[in-house]
Length: 82
Image (spheres, rainbow, N blue to C red):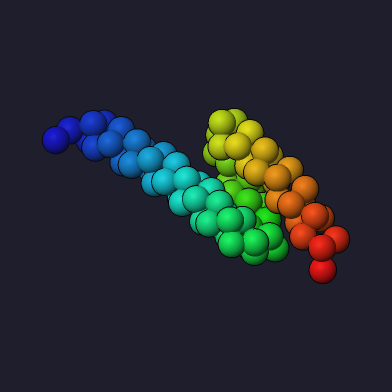
């Protein structure tokens, strides 16, 4: 395999890995949200947003912002119940 082709494959692999990392964190945040573990969900979303900003991944960033709003709303509602 030629050197430019190998470099291209490695670049694509890094982008896919980064995307999987962000997706994994979003799914983990969702799991913690469903369990009512809002602090953990928020921490995962913060980390995912940082990674998405560094990767210029607007789609993931938009999803994170929407999730953060849900965590804030449900987190406040949960605090008011206790």
